[in-house]
Every structure is written in structure tokens, then in C-alpha cells.
Length: 89
Image 1 (tube, rainbow, N blue to C red):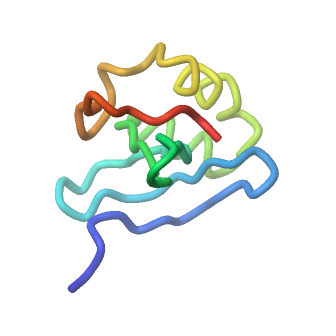
Image 2 (cartoon, rainbow, N blue to C red):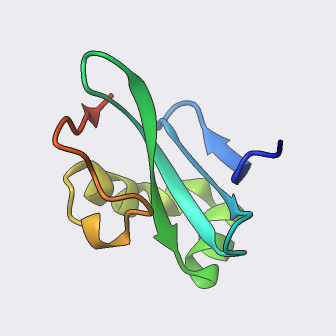
């Protein structure tokens, strides 16, 4: 079975990835989080314009990445957070 998310670019240094959401055909940015029991990624919807900009210059995504870590873009989360939501790692 194919994964829903096809990662196309990542920054090991800044700990995020961008890619294509195969279910919707849209784009996402993912950050790693941990709730102490499990490590997982939170995926945020991004626009095609953001995807194009971020993929051509990953450092241009850093303000958005930091905003995601501060939970400023929760309305763009693909999955709503659970009661045991993790913290960015």
C-alpha cells in the first residue's frame, strides 16, 4: 500500500519536510513531534505557491516551520491534534 504522503524535499538540519498529499493532490509541510510515548509527524496543508517557493529554497520555509512549531498554523493541520498532542522535537 502506498503511503498517503510523498516526501519530495527535506531539511535534516532544520527538521522538516515538504511533499505531495497523494489523497488530495495538495501539498504539505511536516514537522516531527513527540508526546513521550511515540514520535510522529504533524502535516500542515500548504498552497502550491508555498510548495514551489519552499522547494526552490528550503530556507524560505523556516518562518512557516517555526510558526508551525509555535502552533500558529493549527488551522492548516491535516489531522486535528489529539488530547496527547506531541511537542516539536
